Image 1: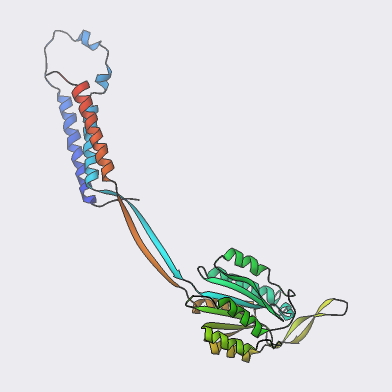
Image 2: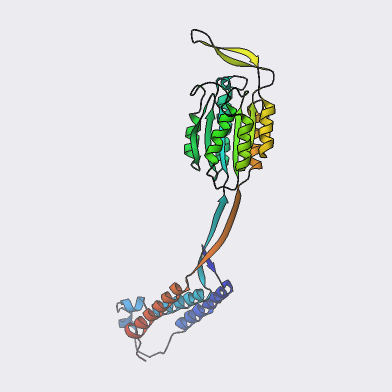
Length: 329
């Protein structure tokens, strides 16, 4: 974008109006006269290139004056820049993939709703490093910490029940998530643990893992997913057929609440798709990344281009007017 440092000088361009007007007036008045008996022979004389270019020197001088005025106004190329520096948060999503996550109290089922909500959360966390841990009877890392949202969403799409031994090892899942954050140098480290059941594995007790999180300075948000009362759970018969039976929903809310309180996080209960989305949005608001935006403007002076063009026009005027179209007094 072109900008003038001294735009008021451009008003001098109006001086070109009387300059051009005076030239036209002088041309119409004519110059010196000579008396001759007839102009018949002269009127039939061919008009040369010099005749058609007789006004060129004045035109070049006018252009040169205009270019000098523009140069005095200091034209500049202006570019606006902004530099964003963000201090991202390291976040690990620990997702329960036990068989009960196929319960259909949330449509189409809990695991699908959990994937969709986590995906939307990932998209909203630009600049943060996010990892994914899944757990059932044991736990493993689905994706290490990364800022590559495309990779994260791809790996998240592959999260489903039945990949590992069934069960609900909340402590192991949390410990695996903490292991991903052990070497993290981020100022803020967060685990979002989502489960729909009660810990039934004793490898690592959930509160023991919470103690480790507290020592590492990791804040743990816990989410209990599932309706209250009963829900249709998948049941497999001896022939491998799957049917759904209404069974009581059992979530160890007390343990999840204690984990959150010990680490400075919060416990949330998500009873449907809408409330789960609200939970992730709430966490998104609580854990804001520090973003510093520095804006600056660069100016590239362009007056020299106009001065050189004006000089070229004056030189060309001199060459044409004094050497080629020079008049004999």
